[in-house]
Length: 337
Ligand SMILES: NC(=O)c1ccc[n+]([C@@H]2O[C@H](COP(=O)([O-])OP(=O)(O)OC[C@H]3O[C@@H](n4cnc5c(N)ncnc54)[C@H](O)[C@@H]3O)[C@@H](O)[C@H]2O)c1
Image: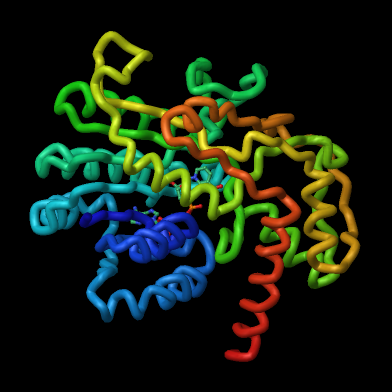
């Protein structure tokens, strides 16, 4: 199949592209290579795909999702079978100072993707939502049937909006869409703005890490390989109109949680990093942050029923693989400079 992956220089987009090519698909990847975090890491991810580019299995295009003309032309020229939209302005805290980045990439950009799908008969649009749509939800585990009408960050509001926009297009134009609420994804080649990356860096450099609420929060950390397997299973599972149980509109529309289904305490997460680094962390204890939630916990019954897949990587195994990659990668980088 010919598949469009947006955000293909990003953490999840790159990992997905690699696997899709291995499975024999042709991938067109787009990304605007913005500097929200280290651009060199994005370029290094793309370097891993150089060989596939030479074999014609992968084409990378530096396109911004908000460029309406370019996106329109891309869809018309390439006629994708499946589209996986992972490009977005991620991060919760960054939205305080940069609200427009979220509206541009996550709303205007997503509309351009929906329009492309509408006019070129794409068979399935899979797009990234986020566990952050659950906001201050207190019911555990978080179910896709829970109300998610009260976002506590602009990032979450744009992700919830994506689900609403997708439902509209599924209903009006019969485009099968599946939204995936990812729960804290981590792993090799991951994101420098996330805690596991910052903690590893600080611990290896002998600097203290900021520990909120004595590490008593729980997170449903999900290893990248599990996320990729989940995305691919979902891609193959195209929703039909009759699948809709959420509304009488009967749109070919689905939402799934993809999380490990096993929340772990921040304390256990820190211990896993310390063990993998072979160094004890210096800690800077801080109170719980405003807007932080005590726990995230994914109910994945639907995902298991519909795709037969359940994530299985323990935090200790996943963090070990991340730290091994981190040590090797930055050693290589240090040699280069
Ligand atoms: N990593 C997680 O824990 C997590 C959790 C929940 C949801 N998500 C969602 O999953 C998706 C992928 O996340 P990720 O962790 O790989 O993030 P990432 O930031 O590594 O990847 C996103 C990529 O999209 C690109 N991009 C951003 N705006 C763009 C635009 N306007 N045009 C073209 N490219 C653009 C960025 O350059 C980046 O390479 C995002 O939608 C994110 O919101 C991620």
